[in-house]
Length: 171
Image 1 (cartoon, rainbow, N blue to C red):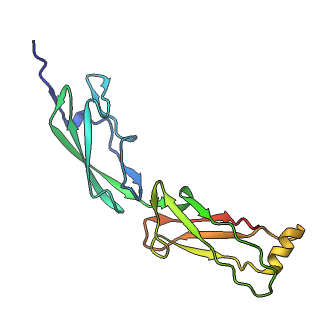
Image 2: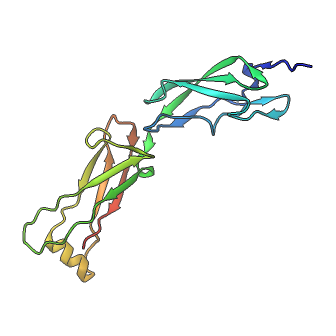
């Protein structure tokens, strides 16, 4: 006997996806999408696959749900991409060498990543530093001052929001 694939229908989509947080690699909905057929949870990759459009920027995006295996056909739904909190990114600040000279200007090597994708300085974020001076570092070493930090702040109109304070290692 032959099993006839079941056509996908809108009523198989358990709930609307709603808001999805931006990702530099493209926003995805696998963890928010729930599909059911006759009381059984449908499995992503086994029963259906997904194809995205417009998921690389903020705003409305579409996902096409494509039947697979015992399911056939396509349905499309929309979701909204919202900015990501920049504190969810990984920030690496190369340690700096202490310089005993008055007036020395410290330079920082900073890498900010969203997953495996590198963010672009002055497009996605800006670097705000408290002035790191010999006096500040001497006070920190003596236990009377604050540890040096860098603040990564999301640029206005980027796909990120808020800011993240990152400690600076000094050797």
